[in-house]
Amino acid sequence: LLHKLRSFLTTLGVLFGVASVVAMLAVGEGASEKAQDQIRQLGSRNVIMRSTKPEQQAVSDQKTRVLAYGLTREDFDRVDKTFPGVKRTVPVLSSAEEVRVGAKSCRPKVLCTTPDFQDVVGRIMAAGRFILPQDEENLSLVCVLGYDVARYLFPFEDSLGQVVRVGSHYFEVVGVLVPRGPLGESLANPSSEAGGEIFIPLETGRAYFGERQTTIRSGSRDITEVQLHEIIAEVDTDENVPFVAAACRSMLVREHEDKDYEVMVPLELLMRAKETQRIFSIVLASIAGISLLVGGIGIMNVMLATVTERTREIGIRRALGARRRHIVTQFLVETTVLSGCGGAAGVAIGLLIPWIIERTADLETQVSPISAILAFGISVAIGIIFGLYPAWRAAHMDPVEALRHE
Image (cartoon, helix red, strand yellow):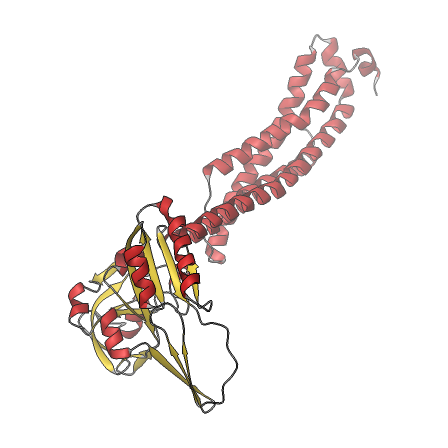
């Protein structure tokens, strides 16, 4: 330990290894936890069926083309009334309507759905209420705004009770939803940005907007007809989710000639994300472990050189009565101090790196105390393991030969 520069350089290998273990696991854990949280927002017991546009068929010369595809009301009835294990089912009809208030306008995802949507998907009200059963029965012109839509249309005033124009009809705002994460939004509503949504009663949407959407381009009109864009089935238990998902896939394959649907199971995505995170953690730990191994080899190399330099000192101690275990203890303490200092500094830097990343790269990290303690413990263990051979070699020197060493 007299050679301070050499000791410092020796600890760098351990320092970087420990820092990389702590930092990489923190970044990986943070990213994984964020993804898992957003998947959970969709409901771990939900099975989500969506309409998807089939592959484009041969172009027709007709000026008007009608393409009907996707989920149907019959699909909804089959899932809702005949599938065992399904607690409740929510239909969703999407419409691309312009929403306007005065001079301000935007095109959020207009979702026509039922009152159960809020509970099944787990949406929280920031103000007001969600759709009620009587809203559907009376074809009420009421709407619930996503957080970003409300903030954009009414930046300086309370949006509750205000009137917004959706398409060519006027709706009263009765509620505003709490915002949710971007991934959760993009999974729940593929073509909308986070919070870019507005909810209206399903029967009101069917009555006023219908199921047809028209796109005009190059002198022709493309009309798409979709009865339901989504069917969300809430399952009674986690154990029944795979069975209900398999039943939904089987039913859709049987009833649909074209592959104009997709089935998404958040629970499957969650399990896949956890498995990916586990593999990712193993890979990161392996990479960082190599750095620690290199650091340990560096400690052994330096300690072997130190044993050679201090041969005469070892001989004097043995001549004065020091036993072999005393020599072993001396060198093991030195290697443990070197690796322990490197490990402590590595933990400090490893905790600092995620903190910097969160504030500069806008990424979430999650530091686990266990990973920091484990990394430090491994660094100390490496010092002991790689210090054993130099210590053993020093302890087994012949005292007479050691005293003759110049």
